[in-house]
Image (cartoon, rainbow, N blue to C red; front, side):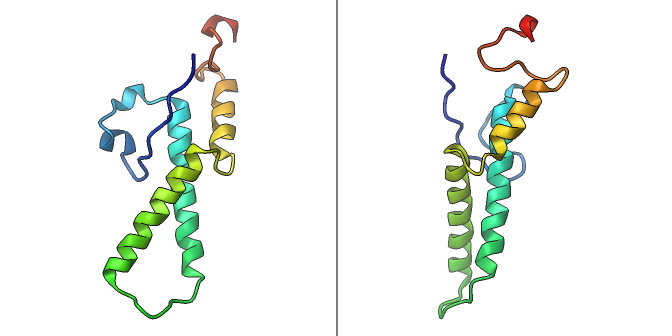
Length: 108
């Protein structure tokens, strides 16, 4: 049983934006979305440290923001910095947390 890749949906209410039932969003999905959000904020912060070059327009700023969000989502879906994996492991080990993939709930 393999898990389907999680589509990107950074930002508040990501599950709702994707048309997903928030009650059915898994811990893995939530952890991945959190990592994508964190990476997006990190990229925006890093971009502010780079000196601005010539053309500074609202269109360019919007494009760069969208680029940061897409890059963050891509990074999170492909391992990112490992934060989503650590959160998911924590949730699986926490009392009352979701069972580990492939493990029946009674054997935890």
